[in-house]
Image (cartoon, rainbow, N blue to C red; front, side, top):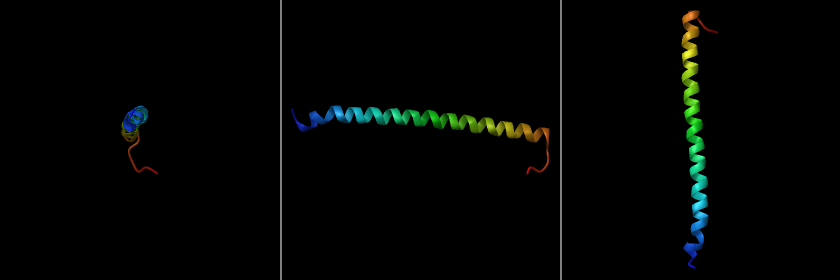
Length: 55
């Protein structure tokens, strides 16, 4: 068994972990973007109800 063959399983596991973390990051980034959009809509709604300077 060559050295690269011994390392293949380790590299595969490492790549799987990296992929899983990347998926989690993408999901969290998407959730953050959605929440920011909702917050912007709520701010617009609040401004429409009570126009004027905000504190």
